[in-house]
Image 1 (tube, rainbow, N blue to C red):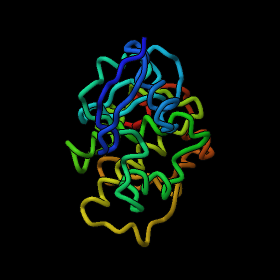
Image 2: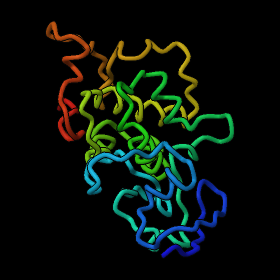
Image 3: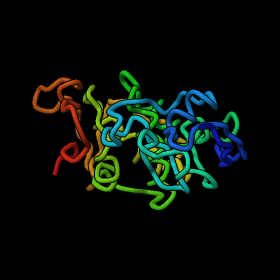
Image 4: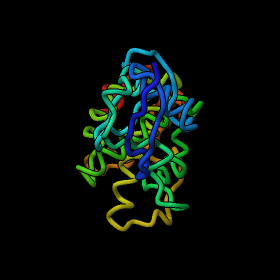
Length: 202
């Protein structure tokens, strides 16, 4: 039976008429028309549906509406400040970090939460924070670079004069190396379908 629930979505107080056991993902996509969060596994394990719930990354596919009532939800659509993209959105574009893009909305909201608490994370910190997310395209290294770059934007780096997406790779010690080291192609350097835990060379 439908009931009326209130929650704050992307800074706006919304009233939703839906079944109490409807998933938050269903309500966001089908009731409120916010299509950024995507259905993946349906078990809260892949990360495609992640949103920020009271500022913390959470899988919207297995959160019932009654549990989200009265709380604050931020989807990927709510990261930007009007027409100004969030630094992590800008960095993903600059690094050309997305490939098919299916997983990216969830990764962006998790990365935004990380940057809110750790404004200039290193690659290892980023990889650990994103390790719950699955990327089958193997673009994890570009995504890690993008989040590190977003931290630099927050520190006042304009990004001008950058070598461009995927052109160079800076590790946490500051050494710059080519993605194509040892003759590997950029695709091979980014290879690996799954989480982010093994994307950072040590």
